Length: 124
Image (tube, rainbow, N blue to C red; front, side, top):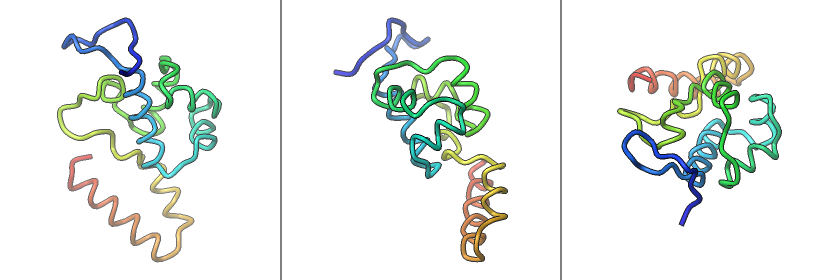
C-alpha cells in the first residue's frame, strides 16, 4: 500500500505520495532529463527530486510553482492524478522547444516541428 499524506482531496480520495512521485518521474522522463538536470532547472537538488519520486517527501509550494512554470505541469494533476482532459503537456514547454530547435540538426528540427504540431492539434 502506498504512503499517504493526512489530507484528502475534494472528492475524498486520499493523496498518495507514491503516486505523486510516479507522476513527477513521468514528467521528468518525458522531458528527457535526469534527476540532476531536472533539479537544476527547478532550482532544487537531485536528492529532493529523488525523495519526491520515491514517495518519501511531498512537494512544497515553491517547488510546485516552479514545476508549473518551467514544465507547464498542472499541479492538480500532479497531486491528485485527476485532470479533465490530458495530463501535463508531456513535460514540454514552448521555451524548451524553441531552445532545442535552435541547436538541433535538420532531422531534429523536423521532429520538434512534428511534436509541436501534434500538441497544437491536441489543444495542449
